Amino acid sequence: QASLGENHPEVASILNKLGNLHCEQGNLDAALKAYEKGLEVERAVLEEDHPNISVTLTNIAHIYRHQGRHQSALSIFNQTLTIQYRSLGTSHPKIAVTLGHMGQVYYHVENYEQALDAYQEALRIQRDMYGDDNLDVAVTLNSIGQVLYKQGLSELSLQSFMESLRIRELLAGKHHRENATILHNIATIHLDRGDDDEAMKFYMKTLKVEQAALGCDHADVVTTLHHIGQVFHQRGELVASLEYFQEALRIERRIFGKDSVNVAQSLNQMGNIYLQRGDAAKVMETFSEATRIYRRMGHTDEKISIAGFGFYNFSLMHPECAAVA
Image (cartoon, rainbow, N blue to C red):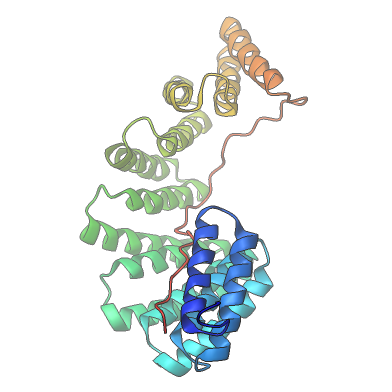
């Protein structure tokens, strides 16, 4: 600033890089200040529809979204979209990305109609640009499936998930990590519809993909083992249910430590199964161990909850870095 002055494109670029650094370190307030200062400089020295301005606006919107300031995020994303429409036309991949971000925010605030509109427009652009068999198309179809499910349209939701899976398996192979995300969502739909057999089939496929992609001792594998154990439990197959919870417990002790909340949750679930089987000794053993862990952690009420059946989404914040104008 001393040599270039406060309003110089190089200064804006440095401020945005500083914002990215703060963002990666988890310091969102500092990141927001840097981005806002960078935006002020860009608006002073660049044309109003310059792409660098849309990049900085997007980064600011992401900060707002992660701070829970959803309406502010939507307002900024709309500003980004306006610039992109004027400078790029109506069918550019960057517009699809912005629409996808907006769809995520609308989904989070339960405005499913607006979320669906945003995702469907993003999908139109992606298919126009890339064709049907594209990984970005697969991601958007997964998001559309989630919205349709929330709207009570489970059959359409399932169709969207299945098409997303078809594309991913075609382009990335059957054992790609992100395939597990879609397989999990398909399993969840079947379970919700009361089709335990189909749910189990897709949870087993999820487990196979996760073990191949992540190794056997991974937190995602634990989650899927819990889901399989819960389905067996709901079906009254207690021995099979116990086997999967025991395997989850083994992994949890290894990766989280023997006195972790995850271990206590699994022990509690297993204790309930032992109770149903009438195995008093195992009931006492598992409940006592779970209680000991919770007391050691300072918990006063043992409100124990296993992760429920929910959807997975592709939702990460990746701040962009605009080139020096």
